Length: 257
Image 1 (tube, one colour):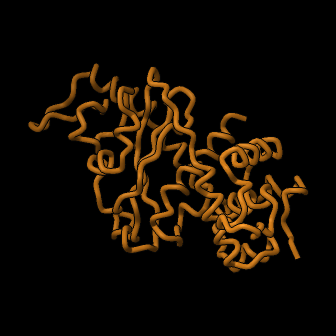
Image 2 (cartoon, rainbow, N blue to C red; image 1 turned 120 degrees about the vertical axis):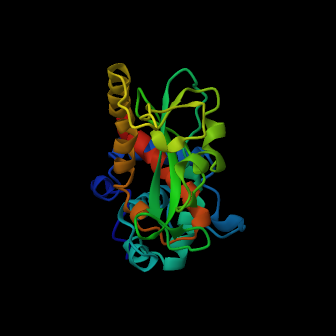
């Protein structure tokens, strides 16, 4: 018996954070990207759930981080069917890339606890984690790019280059904290001289302004982690990039409301 369905709008907001109108817009986008194709591409094998319910299943899974054996019965499908839905619909929710380059971007990394030790490494949060880079538009606070997850023991300065997010932000002014040394194109706060002397007042004032603006990306990362799957990622690390991109897309949908 199916408990949660998109045909009852009152279920959408509690399990996804989206309003029904926002959710319908998301379903139309997924349909446009090929979400109506039959299961696994096998002729004659139709999905057990309509497209709207499949999108709802994925958003609910990301929001609650329930196990497959928990979320499957909520939608009246087996746990293996829930796996297939997430594997198929998740990538279709990916963030739409933007080419606007006239606005400042702010980039920061966050550690995502990840159980797949093929990528995750012991990190400063005392867990096996991956380092995920996220860039936002400084003016609108919309996420404009996400990087491929890297081992959590890696520094932001190297992950910024290795994750591919640097290429996505090419020709755009980028701000970040002081941990991005070695990337001269990034605007960072002034560092204190090695001789221990104090910075002049004008540099301190610029650093204070820099901190206030850069805090916007930290707020975005905190809101993205309302989707609890980013607090304990149990799936294969190879699927994390699509998940982060999809959650960034949902964040943007919520912010544009």
